[in-house]
Length: 306
Image 1 (tube, helix red, strand yellow):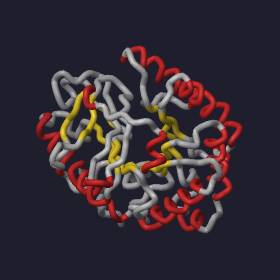
Image 2 (cartoon, one colour):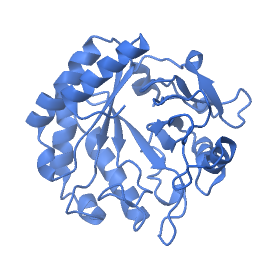
Image 3 (tube, one colour):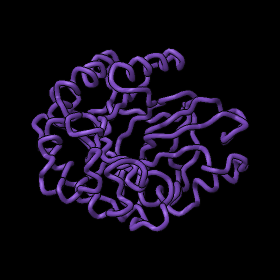
């Protein structure tokens, strides 16, 4: 659920918990990317990490997802400069601030939606190899931070954008060993086509080039856990998948189990109706699950098994 930063996001999460009638298991926030000055540990701790630390203390076993931009405004596509170490001081400050504020086990959502050319300065559609190289570099910086036990999520958006150098997930994949979870942001709508039928819309989401089915196949081939970092079910009668869909939506974190390499995962409902993705018992296509399907694990297990 995205509702501001820091204390504002925590307060919104608490209100949402009241609506659900139960705790939310994963909190999430983002580091702004207006400038490198945003990577200020005092500001991050005071306005973001400390409120989330209090929230987690009150919910033993909860986890924290933190979105970290590898580049900021004015440094569009500066992947080579990042790999050369020019921004390491900023990355190190962010990593140390997470550790020192009690979030050394954070799930770092690094450079989200790289296949979306409008996402930010780190968009990879013009230089996917450069993005992958910088992703690896930032992970290395974070992992060398004393006291850290970070895990990393690479989340994509649906589809590919024509006329760009990025054509498939593998183009910007940072290599095995640098990503614990591969995610896809799935919005239950077809942009520009509000009259599409629910079945046709869902088919489009799944079957388009670099769509959901292709992503599931890629995750299974790599042996990562799969997560659903961002998504929405919209109001019935507009873009909703089913008539009973409300104006709120849910996201679940769940893992695909590729044989012996399956990893523990945590499921979190972030807004409204409790639905998430789960793998079928025989490893077939993913199916639409309900709140009873929540996969639960102590977050410490993610560090032990990653």
